[in-house]
Image 1 (cartoon, rainbow, N blue to C red):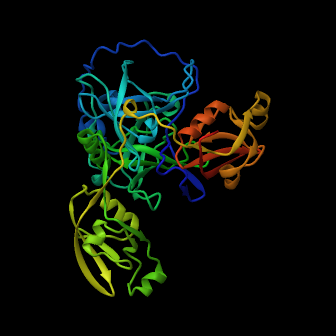
Image 2 (spheres, helix red, strand yellow):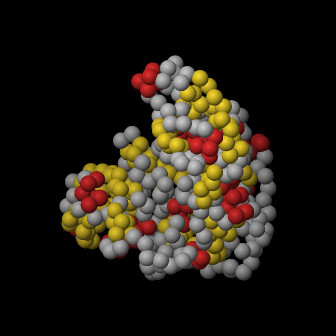
Length: 466
């Protein structure tokens, strides 16, 4: 999975990786009729098929009913190799309306010039990118036609830690792969500036599962599989899904306006530790401390001041800055809101109207051509020979001959073999260049060093030259 908003965020001793995959196995597309529309007839799984008391769940009914609505997504950019194999990003998506609207991850299709959708019946369609939201890592695609099979949207707030869940996707290009597990945790925040409270599961998902649905035992989609925790780029027992209610709010905005505008208050906040709580006279660390108020912002207009502690938004208690960010993300721009703040030991309620921040982008066909700086890793590399690959026990990669800039700062050195970028396997020099060119400001590099695999979080530099 590859999500630019969260890429390179360290988790414990490993790294959170987005799941967009690249398939390098030689493959010829099966012929498909692109002119027709789906006429799939589905039956809803019975309670008996789903809930077998005292037995392992029967996932077959869910797969039979909603599997046809899960699609394979291939995103290609200009310059991608068009040979027998695939060199663009591969991921998964799912159809949410009979007229062909599809949800997937932003990082699956970001910067793509062509997106192709393949259904389970083998038909292929060119898809339009209606809009994307980088912050929420959600993209909305559209294929022409009607009568397409669809998933059923559920309510993730009704799910519980320990509940069984099912994923359908295309890990490593293996379409319609079904895996299962349980919800390990809810409302998991992976970085301070992430508005998403992820659903954590132990469902095996791998590169290529990005954008695929996470089902509960009622056959309802409760999340979009987006990231994994990994030191190697492969599944290690921790995967993360975007709650479907958050994704559907983004989808509705995109379909309505073509882009996403996020509500904002106009404050910079920081967490409160024990020491700060004591200095502020708080009984325990709670709330979000206002470090700065943006001039002319809704917060300044409402009277929010530096040093205030935001403890509630619209009556909902705020325990951390991440929780404040998540609550604000649920609001529409221009919506009225009430902030409860602590100031000099007294509680105040301030009324404001949220601002907006457009974060969408037009579809690739409408993008203006312009020269923009390209990200640089700062390595000189050469192909890995078959003898070298056999000696260190890897299937592919490129050898670092010289490391400077971001790579050197992260700890990558000469002799390292780069084997993965953001969870996507690296097999040749050209592919590495394309992956870095499409990367965001931060990325995760996995190398083989002396037989050991090491992951490095790297902040890329920008340049107009390689």
